[in-house]
Image (cartoon, rainbow, N blue to C red):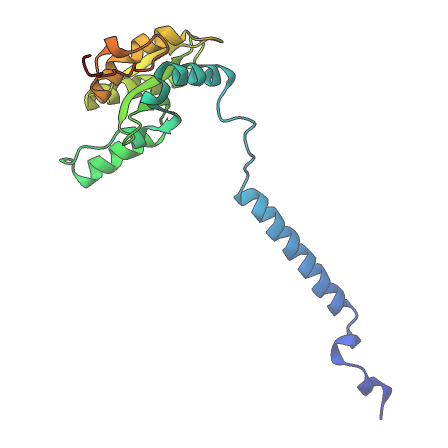
Length: 195
């Protein structure tokens, strides 16, 4: 028996195992790189910017338990497309909404019905953001949905916000504004029997 016949066939080509290992390494690197490229995301440090966070806190104080304040709500979650449109026009209208979000939407706490949208108004906004704001304003007007603009700042007056939101909350909750305390709560009415 020849010593040549005692070796496995692949052992005769020392480059084959090396080539296989190299191919596996290249494939592993490609898959790793593909994963990074396919999902190039990081978690944001905060969902709300400091001025948005300050407004959110003031809005929550202004409405108390009479409303939910939903931040950064996609416009398509608060507005819908009319039913009488063709499929093509409806799809186009939905696509236009797709790029837009409201800073905040004040909702009825019982059924999350949108009551009013609240947008921060920043004077230094870029022209593109002003176009988007104009689109949202026109879309809200067409839908009969109010859009309240609040100048951006570091602090917001809870009392002023309460007054601005009062008409929307009254319409939703069906009670008189005179029943509200200064902190936005509704005073309970005791109906005691006469003595």
